[in-house]
Length: 384
Image (cartoon, rainbow, N blue to C red; front, side, top):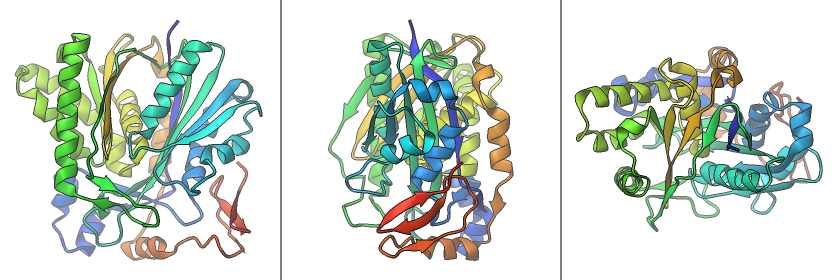
């Protein structure tokens, strides 16, 4: 029996800005954004769309009635939580109509949370093969207007259904984990935006990958040639490439070209969306699977997960025969293509228009699962 990802989908809000427009508004060379950090567009949400909106939309499109009756665990990974106590997964459980006798909880460890949820799901299904687990990584990455991190913002969610005998990717038992107490990125309680030591964060990310990669080689006896592709946590698309280049020097030119070509396929979606925090690694995986023509059944894909603070993990999965049939490529491309481009002025207005949960109010947003009402601080959501 194998265990892994049976279904996977993403959702982003229906608005975006062009990074050339942002560069001009901030009086910088557009190449700094398009080439320097590797971003072309940035997903933008209104105050009536939150992590639950994104999570529900990402999951709803892939779940059948049979799935909803079989799922016994719902996990939400996020660092953009809307409540200090109640898990977003409890609300998601209701909105999706998952059968009542299920476990629901929320995971936090910066951008690593999605992987923690995925590994929990894998272990649970291994012990209970009849079970299905829904894992959703959902976030809103915000650093503030005119801030250094502004061009690396984003919003959206990736939903994964973990089952026995999956149709897309079977997960291997080869994880290498690393924990280091480092303040490269953190957000104290009460702060709207994270505090970031940019140089330290970049350095920690790269060194963390080097450490788990070398330990993977030692522990699992695998080399670069054993992987058809590597997927990375992508806070911005050049970040993963920097880490990859740090280990490619010892490889042949042909091997470097092969792996770098797969990397470019894995960042197609992220270039148009931005940072999904907990979901960014899995948006990269989806982009790789839906935009590469070089993968086939049995291909081993290495995945590097990183969460500031810092926790890292390197693990792998193998593609299942006919995995392409279980993907949602056309829907994802349509989702990205049909978004509305905003002016920088409108983006700035939306950014500053914050949700006040202390005042009862109604909203009119036609996006499925958007917030329709605030009553006694509780958010109510539009049905699908």
